[in-house]
Structures are given as C-alpha cells and as structure tokens.
Image (cartoon, rainbow, N blue to C red; front, top):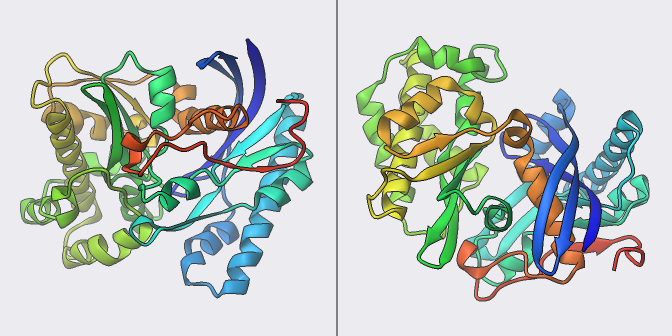
Length: 363
C-alpha cells in the first residue's frame, strides 16, 4: 500500500473562492481510502473575481497572461497553505478555473498553468483533467464521479450543489453523471442584487413567494429534456437562462429567490425519479457543495422527492471536490483510469491529467 499527501485545489463556477485541502490518499491495488487533514477556502479578491468572470471575452494575449498569472497565484496559495498549517505534501492536484467549456466543439479550457503552479510551490503538479475526455468527445464534466465510485459507493446517488447542481449514480452496473441545472451560480446572482454574496441560511428565499408563471417557464427550458450525458457552462446561463430571469424583473428579489429554489428542487427531483425509474423511496442521496448549507433549498428538495438526503460533516460538504481531484491526481501518476466513459459519454476511458514537475520520488 502506498500513501500520498496531496493538496487538492478546486475553483468552482460560483466563484466563491478557491478550496485547498490536504488529503491523505491510501492506494492499495486499485482500492483507495482517504482522510482530509487540513482545508481552507481562500476568497477571491474583487480584482480576481472580475478578471475570471470576464475572461471568456478577453483577447488571446490576455487569456495567456491570465493562465500563467493564475498559475502563479495558485502556487503562492499552496505555499501559504503549507506554511500556515505546517504541513508537507507530495504533490498538488489542481482543477484550475474553467474559462471555456464547449464539449460539443471539443473545447474545454481551465486557467491555472500547471508549470507555473509547480515552479512557484516547488511540488509536482497534476492539472488539466478535462481536456482528454473532451478530446474523446466526452462532456468533460462532471468529473467527480470517480470519487463517488471509489469513496461514496454506499450511497445511491451523490448530489453536488455547487455553482451547478450535478449528480452521479448507477444505472445497472454503470455509473453515470451529468449537470442537472444551475444552483448557487443563479442564487448568488440574485443575492448580489441585495448587496449580499449569497443567501445565508436561505433567508432571502424564506421571505419570498413562488411566482408560478416564471417557474413554469424555467422548468420548460430545452436543456432539461435533453438526454445525459450533458453539462452546463456560464455562457448557457448568460445566453439561455438569464433572459428568462430578466423577463421577470418586475418580481422582488425575494420572490425570484424562492422561485429559483423551487425550480432547483423540481429539477433534482425529476433527475432522481428518472435515474431510479421512479422507485425513489429508500434511495440515499449524499449532498455536498455550498447549497447543502441552505435549509430552504434542502426543504424544497425534500418536498419534491421521497429520497433520503444525507448531509455529511461540514468539511466534506465544503471540500469533497478538492478531495476528488486529489484522488484523480494520485490515479493519474499511478497510470490508472480516472475518467470512465459512462460518466461523460466519451468514446473510451481516460487516464487524464497533465504532469509538471519531478514525479520520480512518487512512481
């Protein structure tokens, strides 16, 4: 059995910060176990938040600079994290921050240059986990299903309530995964109308009422009728969803928030119904991501579904994705398949991730 100390790094679409987690990964002939030792979320400055949110509109040179500078920034965060918690690590596994994600055009790009990250922090780095799968005509997202398979297989489904809500679970012998609908990326936008970063404890939604015409229009969005595998991106929010929301500008922020929360609950319920062939009673769903801390959202999920929604300890809720990218980094350096084609609809399985730095002591 081998033991790796891995710093997993995750920056999600909701842009609430960068998650770093020092994870101990035990590897024993394809069997993996974990513990999360230390963890922290580093909030974005307004400068970084603006730069990343506008990156898809940048010219080529600005994009290249951001890729490198963001890699340096992550490297400095790793050094700060190591010093603050007085820890040692064998490698870093970094998701980066998604700038473009158009799998139908075989394009996905995450900034956070692995070479720059490695040069600054002095550790070997595994990064760019999505490109290989997209090159094989997969969705390249969501990628956390490998961790759901290896670490959380006792649950029927694993639901992540991050910027987007995504789910993974088994249909027969095969695990599948896909993005269901927008989640915090949408709720946070409404909260910012009230000069809040997010809807703490669902307080905004709790004061609102469901606007059923808007709810019906949201539930009829074409994406929801598409078969999986499928994935979402920020451009879909801007181009397809936000216009519907703008049409409801006469509504109060509280009513919008309550309507969106119910919309999310309905779409997740429909996904669980579909995956379980409507035999939902007794199904156990592990819930992680920031939305798990929103009691109003969780109440709406429980209203619309008979499944049992289980929220683990706060550390796992917040850092599960960073943990899984740490696992994917270990599987990459062990030359193990870390993306299975049924997860994403790719032509074949992948050993995915780009390597930068000296791995000679690890393999």
